[in-house]
Image 1 (tube, rainbow, N blue to C red):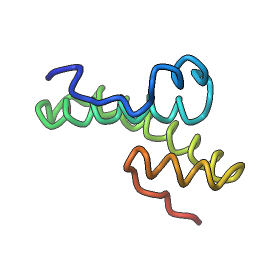
Image 2: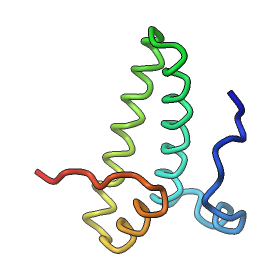
Image 3: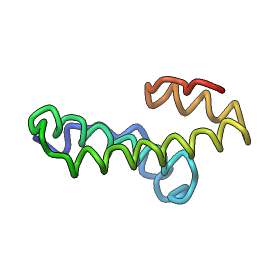
Length: 90
């Protein structure tokens, strides 16, 4: 697997300014999720990586739920930019 195969959506200035923002954290989790997903396609019985993937998915889901409550416009922009599905509401 090539580490640089995941193209950065954020520019360098955005990374330096917003490292603690919700968008930046979701972006980092999304990259980890994509890497782990491609890893698990090759190694189907790697159960520790599966557990790690589930934990990261939960963290990203909680951050996205927080962002959708606080600022719906930023939430819509982020999910469009990262090309991820909108979570189902209960």
